[in-house]
Image 1 (cartoon, one colour):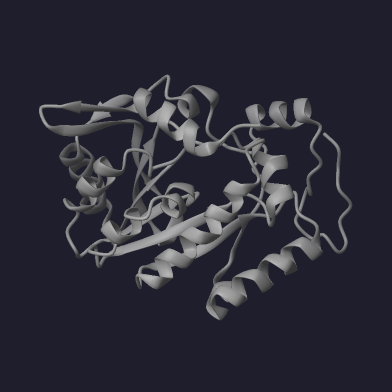
Image 2 (cartoon, rainbow, N blue to C red):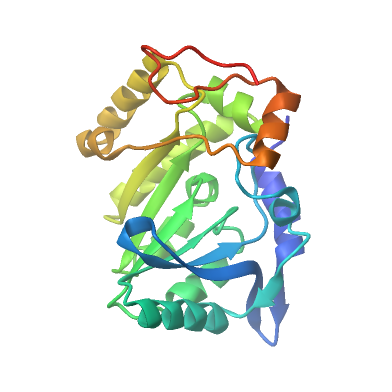
Length: 252
């Protein structure tokens, strides 16, 4: 078991570098994507979790691959893709984009307000850093998608092998975003969850804000070959199609 906050510090040393006063960050691709009715996407390297179901490969997750880009280069690449395909949405995704806060803030500062900027994050650093969310509130075009790793502490640890307390940092990040009137919604990986656990999560989110339970996005497992290998090694059960009331779990 590991501490995601300590891992964040270790990974940041591998994926972020200060060059001529600017914070450069490692990315491994820029691309158009079909999500959110079409968006330009930047995929970062380096994450502070080790989710067994993660679609990212180990080299990208550890920050062993990728190329350093300045905030201006990242924003420029995203805008260029958006203009080419007529997208109204821009996002940073893949691994954990909030690692290297200064870099992210500088990227946001270079995105025109005509684009909606979607930040996809596990929320742990937003929940742990008192100033992070406050710095984000100045960007009126920001929308944050907080991806919960399971429905409770036990599921979180089973899926990530991280300290269970970090699950509460994910929920805290949502509270902070709402307190600062930053547009956001939660998502959760449900392919490993019992129906009653999902209902408990919905109730928890409802207590934070009733709209959260209604906007909860359900993520399902994509069984890439490297994901299948991880799941087999960990002997973790999953739903082949998410319908916990009817579909039995399958052991890989």
